[in-house]
Amino acid sequence: MHEEIRSLAKRKNALILAHYYQTLDVQSVADEVGDSFALAKYARETDADIVILCGVRFMAESAKLLSPLKTVYLPAPNAGCPMADMVTPDDVLMLRAEHPDAAVVCYVNSGADVKAVSDVCCTSSSAVKIVNAMREREIIFVPDRNLGAYVAKQCPEKRVILFDGFCPTHHRISEQDVIDAIEQHPDAYVLIHPECREEVLRHAHFIGSTKGIIDAAKRSDREELLIGTEIGVQEILMRDLPDKRVYSIGSTFTCPNMKRTRPEDVLACLIGEREAITLPNDIARDARLTLERMIELGG
Ligand code: 13P
Ligand code: SF4
Image 1 (cartoon, helix red, strand yellow):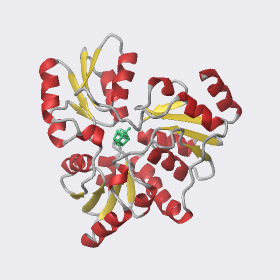
Image 2 (image 1 turned 60 degrees about the horizontal axis):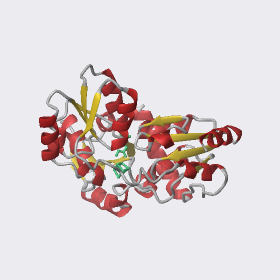
Image 3 (image 1 turned 120 degrees about the vertical axis):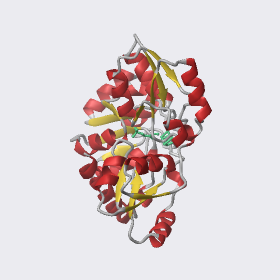
Image 4 (image 1 turned 135 degrees about the horizontal axis):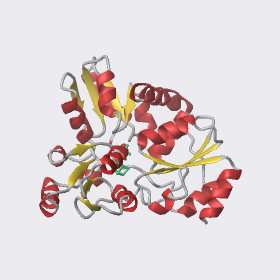
């Protein structure tokens, strides 16, 4: 099936993109694997006719927004992001009414309708840079309260107003989990994603996006690595760094939505058995501007 996917992709001029949280099997059929920021950039810059985004819905929507003339597919149509569903455009409009001088910075893990009423998007790798680059001192940050709190700490001159969203996969990890893991592996280099709670991040040697964690782990000369993000990142590091011992914090660090995609689903996109992503024109026009601004300020 892998060969069939690769040859069909070539024939149809399709670019297959996969997030680091996808299974290694799905990653192995992709042209490029990346974090949210890199995937958005690949989708924007490609001259392929078709983009197949192996990830969750907001990622495929972002690809469509940035490449409106291309046909974009989400291979597992029911792969959503529960955090993205926690905030609505009305929530943002209410916060805007309460804080009329604030700019709205919206994590890319959000619906296109929420992006459309925001000023700029960010990813975990670009959030600090983008918040710092904003003219406004007051920043409404939606939906992730953990990433927002991390950003607020890194940008002390800004007043960051947080929303109450969170990623169920990262938020589930407790401070006790990280303390226990460090007790078991006291010499490990500890790398954690900023979607984790503040009291978990406090124990990290390195905080960054999925790509940031992978790159920092590969640069490290420590023999043991303790990873605080979805299991996909640990699997990549175990494959790429066979001489190191790579452990995960907690035993349930899996995003069920990210694991919905199978190679069969990628093939289904290529043989026309999936519906392409479409977005209402007015929402797409406004949401696109926030993503373009993200690439401009975060690039
Ligand atoms: P990254 O931008 O770090 O890849 O994060 C995406 C995501 O959904 C993390 O849960
Ligand atoms: Fe959404 Fe969390 Fe899954 Fe990332 S890991 S896609 S934020 S639910």
